[in-house]
Structures are given as C-alpha cells and as structure tokens.
Amino acid sequence: MCFPEEWVKNTLLPATNKEIEGDYLTLSEFYVYLGCHFFMACFEGISDRRLWWSSKPISITEGAPFRLKEYISLRRFNVITSAICYTNKPPPDFVHRFHDVREMTEAFNDHYEEIEELREEYEESTGVPLQIKGRLTNFLSWFAFEQVAWQLANEIGLEI
Image 1 (tube, rainbow, N blue to C red):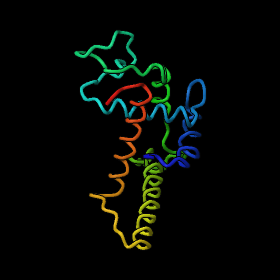
Image 2: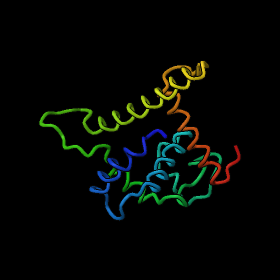
Image 3: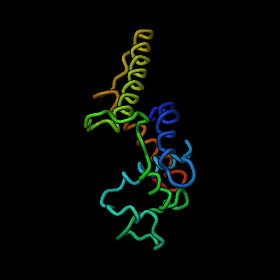
Image 4: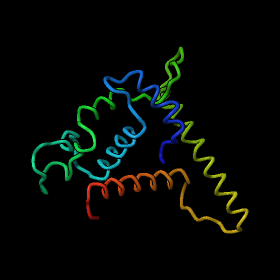
C-alpha cells in the first residue's frame, strides 16, 4: 500500500471529511479514487481528465482508452480532489511550504521503516539477503502502483 492505511483512516479521511461537499469519503471510496489516479497514470498523453468519463464511444485514435464512470462519477472525483487533505494539523505561524504534506510524508517514511525492519529481521533469521535494487521505498511504491493498476484492469475485464 503506498499510503499507510492507519494514517488514511486516522488523518486523511477525517481531515478530508471536514472539507468535503456531500457524502463523507469512506476508505473504500478513497481506494477507488486512488486506483483511478493510478490507472490514469498508466497512460501518457491524456491531459484532460474529463476524457476518462466521456460519453463518446472509445476510440483508438483519440480520448481515453477506458471509462471510469462505473467506478466513480467525474463530479465525485472532482469533489474529492478539491477537498482532499493530507494533514489534520493546524498550519504554523510561519510559511511552511511542505506543511500540507509533511504528516503524510512522515507516515509514509515510518511505514517503510517498519517494512525495512522486517526485511532486516528476515535476513538475520534466515541468513538469506533480499535483493532489492535501489531504495526500498521506491521499490515498494512501484509495486503498489503496479498492483492497483493490474487489479483495476482485471476488474474492468481488460486483457493485458
């Protein structure tokens, strides 16, 4: 998971729900929202997000290759995008350029530090090193991204 679930439940959802218009954002709806972002990121050259919710027939030459409206409406997607909050802490008295994402970044780093500790414990107990190229956070983030994209593709029946 690229976002630690406890942080999502305890910080992102309550902070976002203070700002959101309409129904509160639930954990499952957040996963759908996040999955749509991941899925859209898999396709280059589609700068207009509205194309993912177009009512026009899918075309190989223009627009988005799939439609996301059966998972979430464009209106709801935009409402969540406008309201999403990555911290529930009040801003400091000075301009802090990373205040809005600092709590998320700390949760992310803590989460992956826990995973790193598990990896080290495994290596110590088995004597077998786990070979991961580059930083663990980059490796696991990409794995989570790929996993969500594959699951979403599978759900809509896309054969890859």
